[in-house]
Length: 207
Image 1 (spheres, rainbow, N blue to C red):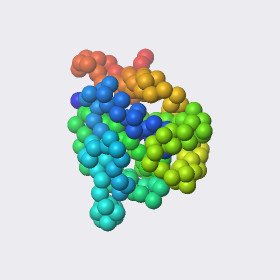
Image 2 (image 1 turned 180 degrees about the vertical axis):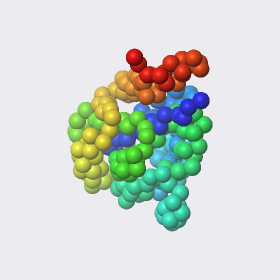
Image 3 (image 1 turned 90 degrees about the horizontal axis):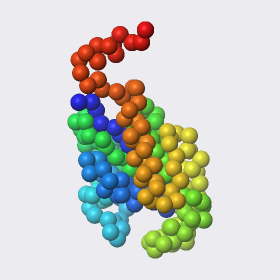
């Protein structure tokens, strides 16, 4: 059994990243989720240990010092980070694993040359992004504008990713991700021979 695929998904705030991840996990029951830590407060509908592990700033900074994170970032005055050991264990056990990261976290992984499928989800427009943030009802206008400005900078980093999907509608976005995963699994570089004789032929290369 080979290692699992790391599916690294990120998006500007207000794009629908969390909803997309939840729907993807419904469609792929065997897909594992590397639950991130954060210092922000829990939102309505979120569950501790399912959506995030919510900890204090001091606890998070202690984990940084102890090098507990695969990657971490400070976004909109809050910390977000993915623990090193759980993600690596899942992948080494052959489990496809979803990592929901901010763009800063992706920059860190790219610098590490971390192997994975990097997917960026974008809003149809900045105005639609603003509308979705307002519908949350959890952010002030000042906070929304700050997220919009951060989002514009994140959109400019799109070339760090392997795939970019515009999230017009969640179901279409999830289906696009499923198509990407299906294609990635049948790449030559990921092929696992089904028998020793096929493996032997593959070693010899092509005449």
